Image (tube, rainbow, N blue to C red):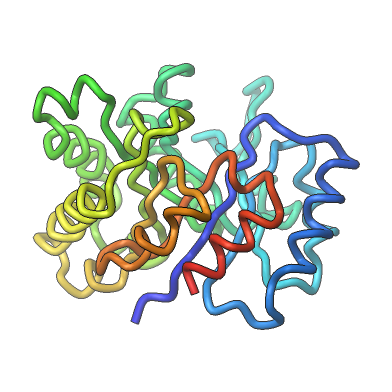
Amino acid sequence: MRKPLVAGNWKMHGTRSENASLLTQLLDRLPEAPAADLMVCPPFVYLQEISRLLKDSDVGLGAQSLCAEPVGAFKGEVSGAMLRDVGCNYVLVGHSERRQFYGENDALVARKFVAAQAAGLVPVLCVGETLDEREGGRTTEVVTRQLDAVLGVSGAGALHSAVIAYEPVWAIGTGRTATPEQAQEVHAMIRARVALADARIAGEVRILYGGSVKASNARELFAMPDIDGGLVGGASLKADEFAQICAAAG
């Protein structure tokens, strides 16, 4: 059985004092042995400090991106080895905001996926369609293309030590959420696509839903057979709400 995973993506939010307060409140609200795996993804500058604050807890640490290159003259970039060195276990690759605002195409996302695994990190591969693409009936085409870019480079076996996150772009920060049935349809399609390459891996890989997940809708979303947890944005900045989402996943 796939163990659920709930990931909090803090994006560009937080200060040292706010982060410490948030984690103190969150850890106080979590059970001693959560039924789901948990992790948070703070901004780069806070990773080492958050790693220290999470020591001896059940909460993992993830980064929001990484460089596709292992080392070199790449100003402003952070390598996978550096992320491991400060305590990261996970890293997001291909998040819609990186694709939209920073021009990360499918080929670059695939290179980042490879770089993450080479550094010993678990990549969380984000895929998803825009509102225009959904309304144009192109959801399967777009998500399949994004997934195949990674499968073509790494093969299905690489997903044994990876996570997939379906994040409909039209439901991120908009207050709109895919219905559980809409989300399940795409999750099932993703799993079926992986199964074409490796049925065993398809049954094992965790596929998260990311798109305005809240305490009020988490339980219904996580009840779907192919939804294995959530990639949570704004709600992960509220300790009580994020704890409720984690409980729903368990």
